[in-house]
Image (cartoon, rainbow, N blue to C red; front, top):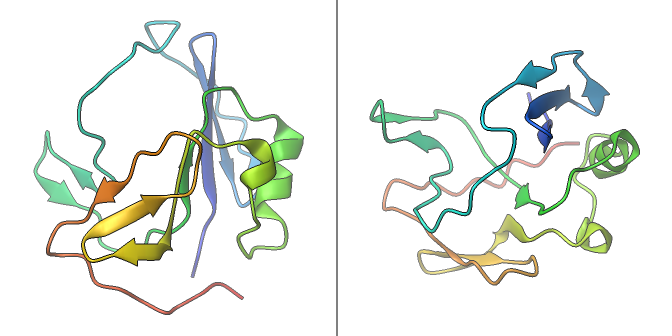
Length: 127
């Protein structure tokens, strides 16, 4: 079973969408703006707890502006990942474009990712 999850951030509030539907969970966080960070972004691993995510992750993207509800609906589409290049993601790792242990960034930021040795490729695609 696949789920499409989107988290948006605006003025100190996180909004969560699952499968294109707003969950009504507006979570206030501090600070009210995000700081620039040159640190490592781990996808599927939480270093603070030393825990891996057990499951499949695909189509991870980061935007430098908040997505609207209609943007989220367009991305989710019919449950099969849509092409999001028209929304100009800053980073977009599709994970179909991998060279060795490098996940190619299809976004505008040129932030290729490094896969660790525990990554297992799957051809399981949502239908």
